[in-house]
Amino acid sequence: MQQIETLCGKPTIINAEDTNENVEITRWIYNKARLRPSQNISSALSIDFVKNKVIEVTTQYTGGDQFANVYCFTLPRKGDTHSQVMGSCGKPDQISQITPDKTVDKDERVIWQYQRDPYSSKMLIYFLNGQVVSIEIKG
Image (cartoon, rainbow, N blue to C red; front, side, top):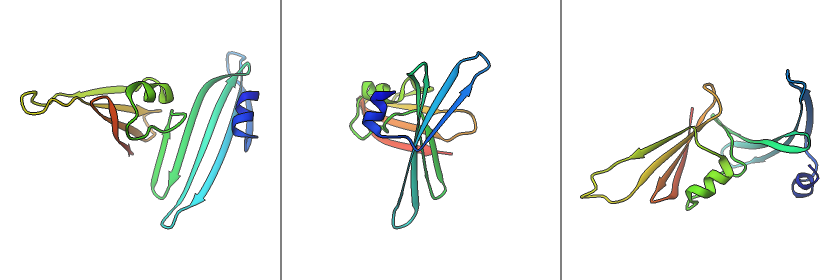
């Protein structure tokens, strides 16, 4: 926990709760808000600890009508590889392989989907030949 505080500073909010297995989970929340010309954009980083060890990192972004709730510690960027995205976001909930006509198009296209629960937004990460080419938030 000390390493996180050294890197991120003091959290905006600290919550502690007991689970039904008598395990205490501590959640640190960091909120940031900034105004863009056309919309208010804000983000929150939540870090859950059990016995002073990180068990989950969640980011939330809001802005206008869009809302994304994803498991990534840092959002992937264009050019990131499969392993970089896996390291930041974990295993995707679904992987779709797009198989074009290999005689015309030899590029490998893959879509990774992340969705926290059935009620949250989906994040789709599009890869071309093993690198991120775009990210889409749906829902």
